[in-house]
Image 1 (spheres, rainbow, N blue to C red):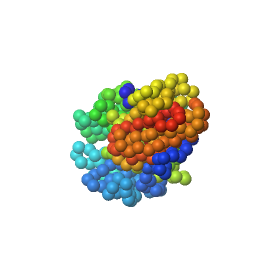
Image 2 (image 1 turned 90 degrees about the vertical axis):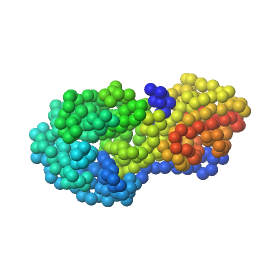
Image 3 (image 1 turned 180 degrees about the horizontal axis):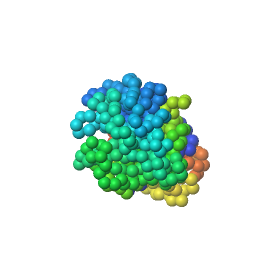
Length: 434
């Protein structure tokens, strides 16, 4: 897991931020844009020609609200209910987490979650339409997936591999009945509703920070690996987050990221409980709480050696994994991220180069975690061998890891930041980019 050891996504942000002297005014991270400022949770987004369509969990706009726009960033218009006819197997209640994809025959297939009258649990159904706006008509008088003993089944999504084979991903709702929650992969025929073989477990709820819940699977194929996005935690508040797992093989095993991709903290509170994430091209779409509603947001997405990076969400790079000159790595550093830091940056030729990734070219903020104990210290920071500025580190004491922000202009892709001795002494723990 080469990059999982080098590119770390921040789960919490606990360090104190101080102004960066000599770097100009501190630049705010580029926050995601709320493009539908109304209740539009668990968004699924497709593009047909030059038009974008988005679908959401039930709200006042309908059983499955649908919106459209001429651009991913809007303006978006909610157009009505894409599923006006309730399936025969479903009772009253909310319909959750729709997924729409195009079939080989040109029609549109919707997966959705609805309340099963027979089982009393949420189950997965399917519907078809010739138009992405609908109306979608249920394909059957019974659910597509409905296993009451495992808590029911929710959050379907479609995936078509590079060989043309089609798959359904979903979650068994085990956390609702005190059973394991698993994200499943099921091959289907070209119609999207005929099962081929048995289902395969991809990941399950096995980490403390997930609070027993993983859901909302979305699968992306990258050149070197498969990337499985998912949400975790309680959807009802700002502890909800988006993470991912990777595998060189479609069927796994999948390795979860060391830290989540998007949290309330990694967005510095700009989005509350980012989850229900979908991926389309170079963007992610997801919801976040605003009062009692979940608005739809979008942000730019990049791929650092086939690992996802979302603009505006802090990404952590460990300084000790950089390239050092006339300096050394100190292990066992109390309170430091991963327990190691760059030390002995004490000489005119002492420096460390840290590679950081930008999804797109533009302005970013670097949050540099340091400790200094013998007076205020300074480093000369060089960006990609060009722009230089002085970064000051107020004396807060050794092993008291503090952050200072520094505004940066980065190129799309990988960039190199050099931190070089200038005055007095400071140790570097990590750098976060947002």
